[in-house]
Length: 170
Image 1: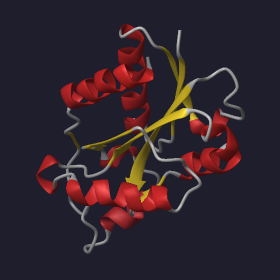
Image 2: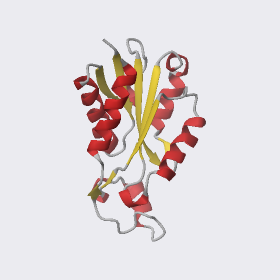
Image 3: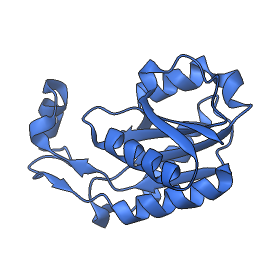
Image 4: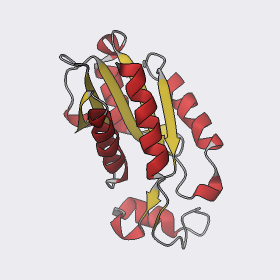
């Protein structure tokens, strides 16, 4: 059975929840998958494939995911890689800009070309923000200024992506 690691970086839990959903869908489809924080991954031994999940902040991949890519560059070259990202926090913002940000960010890393990429709308809850992010969101120029909490993740789109990915991992 194919063994897949779904490694993620997450500041406030949104990307973690998506990673867990992707891992669960892969398992339903006959792929042995586990979700794990990227900062805890030291080795890719025992895994045939890796799915990386990251939020996009200012067009950058989460630092824990970047560090995993650096630590495991040689091992990743020998495995199937897929990447998903949570980009905009509102569906009305569209996914095209976030998709471009993801491709640009990945081009700056030692990652091999992924067999699949997915970009999804995320969620936002100002009550969960850390001090630095609260201060940034409070700035009138911030796109988050005055933004209420909301969750526009499209769980069906995430599930469809994971199902398509499972076919590539068998």
